[in-house]
Length: 555
Image (cartoon, rainbow, N blue to C red; front, side, top):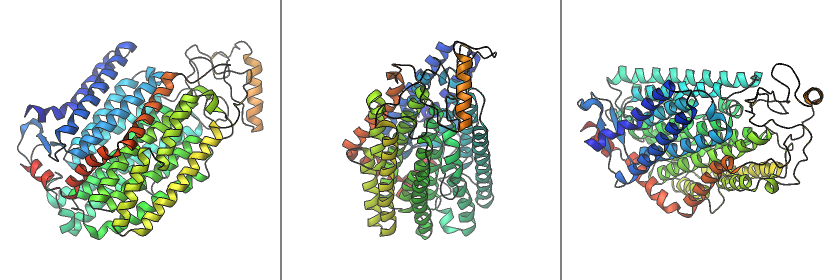
């Protein structure tokens, strides 16, 4: 009983730590120390849960020891254990990047990250639909704060619009989700997932209500045709926040889609064709959307939509092979996509936001970040020996086994287009001769703002200098007035600014290490893919036959 009750600590500890950090927010070293202690401890605890359920068992704790069916259940199986492990790894990695980039020093950044963590953990562990909604909101509300506090300087119109779009779409999706949950409760008298086992496959009204829940989750997961918000919002966030959100927000929705369809619909085969069509379209439209983009993070955002189609194709191929491939793909993608965003983010922190062609030769000047990007990019495209090869091959085999030849063909074609897009970024940024610098420099300590501006990001450093080197009060620093005039003239002419980097300035190890670490993980998962495939197979077995899950929850 003691071990089962420890599941609640995944929510309680980050919540309590966040409250503590708000009270001592001015003590920066203490705040960051507590943040990393909690995140490291959580990662260790999450890793420890994997062998706990490796035999396919399901661990349940009825919160406050109320009777099953009355209590709020916290449920751990292999699927939730794997998700806890990867989300904990990504949160820790992105927090380390945020420290190196200077974002973590924003007031209230650490407690907001811990609040997001508590919401994510709760959403992964709860066995109750209404409390899933509650934990999703616990995750989203601090996320809005993170978006705002990490934007420095004057926000661009596009940046404000993107933030408004992100918040509006998530509020709309949450409203639809709550309506769907309310309808399920009105029809069945319960929102306990285990008690709802098979209800949607037996009752058309419950199926419609549950479909509304799935629609809300599809919005949050950025499934075509409700994907545009992600492609517009993610490129306008700060690098650390973009990477963290890419590994958490949409993936919690995907996790819930798997869980809800497996248990409440009981894998009903009558509706699977809808998923095959929609998710194949998501793969294709996402990758085609990247073709017309010129900014690296915009390209990656569209590819994120495309890869979500791959992941969800696993649930549409509902069967042991399809579910195993989908879960493996989900875990692989969380790691690889965050690694790509961190690699590009490290470049933006040092060189400013750039479009392809405005910066070149980084393979020579920034070998560490070039290695990190290349490894993650090849994994995203499905090139061996990285985890993406195992993920895509497994999914294509599952599609062929299920007789979905068209879906398999789309998966192969999209993989080729993904490779071409990754080579497009590689050629546009990393190859060629290093771009010449001019006399203008990024002030030390500058917190970049991430806008559509073609030149230096609009922001102010900790010394009070603006992006051009002018004093914040309007006075000129050395050479400030002349620099401001040149920058204004260049911007008005519409020409891209040259890269403004002091001689010898490089992306340091602290900035490169998070992306490098995730690149190593994807290589390890590729070389040792059998281990994760076996664990994913255990998780898939619990979804394909949720009887063990249901019996464990209901006692």
